[in-house]
Length: 112
Length: 112
Image 1 (cartoon, each protein chain N blue to C red):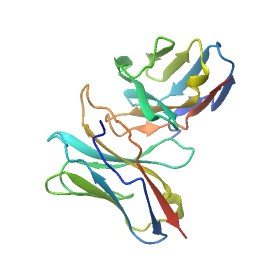
Image 2 (cartoon, chains in turn brown, green; image 1 turned 180 degrees about the vertical axis):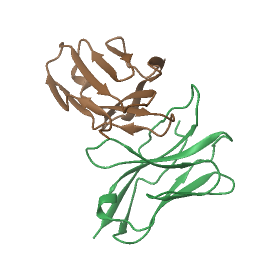
Image 3 (cartoon, each protein chain N blue to C red; image 1 turned 180 degrees about the horizontal axis):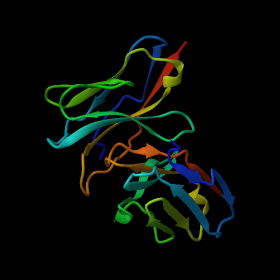
């Protein structure tokens, strides 16, 4: 049982570059969540999908952020263009029952 | 507008029970109490949840007061590996409003 898989684990990029974070949920899970964690703001829900359909994207900070889930086994979170304030750890989580979520190891993003 | 209140930190001795309190005085009748924890540099981990009855699983016990305005997470025999931030969250089980809002949590330090 591989758990939620995220890639890359670490990403360092320069301001203005496009960043794509990837997530593979646990097989059979029908809900997928993207979170962001910083020291200042804590853990914030950005967007979640149910059966590959975005249900709530009210946490997405601005138009520079977009998320897709083209199929049940893959999701991406894209930031274009990236800014230093986007530096954070980004977590993906999946679940069968909405609130029993299994989190991935996270992607640590640094934007210079 | 936090729905839960937790002390910022506590500690306990290894092998002893750790009792982590949480206040949720404005909890609604259909809201569950969830506990997650986050060990340093890892994604959050689901522990347990309950509505009004006490619950127990292999990780912990959850005691909810009769008026449901507070609860206690009990780790019966704390180990050093239980050192983490513990989040108490209230949420409905399913539906569009079913999402986890993480507060600051309580930092539990287990000392040898």
